[in-house]
Length: 392
Image (tube, rainbow, N blue to C red):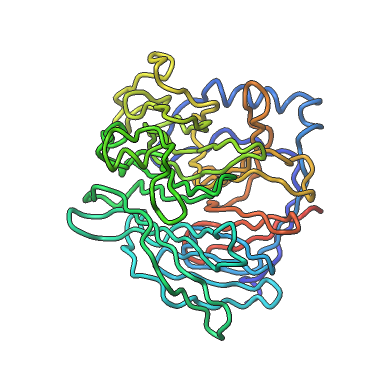
């Protein structure tokens, strides 16, 4: 029991470890990583960005994938095998939410994102993504339902299907399926290319795309591809590989961070109707060593504002807006799997740059900001820690 809830205190100045890579990768350092290292070695840069912190492990979960916070301080945490857990940090008790649909667990699939409707306090809508099995194989879906917290056992009721990833494929990877609401209250979904390459450029598929919908799943009239068919009408941008982090900055700009192939993890600034190039271009190569042309060879495609080789294996993204960590305010915080890191990126300069890397010792799956400005972090895998990050 003590090991389950042990306290880990980590006082960090700035940990820059540019040896992180996918399990399959062993590439050399890119210019973007070298620039970040150079910037971090500058005393002025370090003093303006480095934040000290401490970490406390408060619970464990089985393959958690996403985390969000309620106004009363409780947390909703998804577990890939199909459980949605309601966790109270005050009592350290978890309760399983009933009524969650059956998910297709396997590979990278299972229960994924959990997001609150902007007016959750009034309407109790929450949105979930998960993998399902159907004709042709597997694909992601997004649903919404009413979260009833007025019973001893919370339940999800009035479930509605909002979005379906099409077509279904035989593989169980690269679902993406992150969900976020914009300042315009539109619903945004990241859709991975399902390890199939070509769907990212195929407008008859919504895989490999960033999707923009109304809250009920209908199509906004101002989406950019309204004249290219029913599926294309959902699309805001295309040419994405495996977008596992998606967040709006304080100015309302959408950013997406996605896993590259062998090298070339990307942070992209998302613009309407733009094509981000995959699989035609990438700043990484195929796993078999076959080269992919870099973005600079095809200027008609949007290039990432920052890329990493060796990779960080990004898994989540948020923009920090609290006051507990002043050096991180308005900066992007991304979590890393193979890198076992939390990476802080300043997107405000003309050239975005990594400014701090936290060595977390474990694969990190997700991060959420609490109402008081502290951070909740979930590790990856079975017996994964739920970590509370505060100032020392």
